[in-house]
Image (cartoon, rainbow, N blue to C red; front, side, top):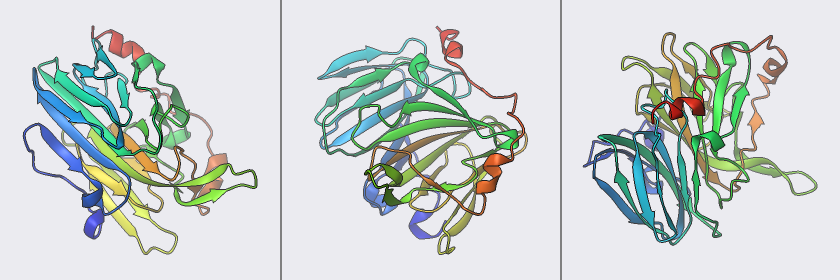
Length: 292
């Protein structure tokens, strides 16, 4: 994408292999970091005025905070072999996260918070699975930090798109806050990250980000560990044929919400599907249990 909306791929610095801050993105709310940590390595910090969501990509960790301690024992071997453990930390929380497996792959998203919520450690079997779409737009969504979770603004979901399928489609946007007569959010104004894992190292997906007036209109080829920033506009994805696609979405903005508006040119597709792709669901919490 043009300028500050390009794919971001920072060189590795210690265990950090992907990091985008609000300063990098040129927006207001959302930050992201992914680390590949060796056994015994620590990630220590203080949330300050931010709320944090840690998403386990693979491996196991233990974490000590000033609000409680937790440990994973059945972390998935890869994002394609189970559902994430999720750790939510509110404002003003100190933490020390230790890698307990030979390699730990973990991501975090954080944003400024306006209120305090309880710490929450969410197990894989607590994540609601939604099968969305139909035909070759069938995909699986695992709710990690969903609307109503107990967070100020942060939202996180992970999405599985089988080889050749479309996802985030029909395309939708969330860049103009709209309320109904009762004050309910019809569309939130949200910044969003798409962080990708592709099942095979040669794999890829395509993501299109565009606005109605095409002032933003970019098509990107994305590979493993790439991240795409969506500041505004519609943003559909398609998985390359032969390559199952995973992406982790973090969102933050006007509301702790996923309220959106579909592209009116493609709304008719919602009524066109004849069935579901039988490859979905691609992962379950039971897969995590087999890792113990």
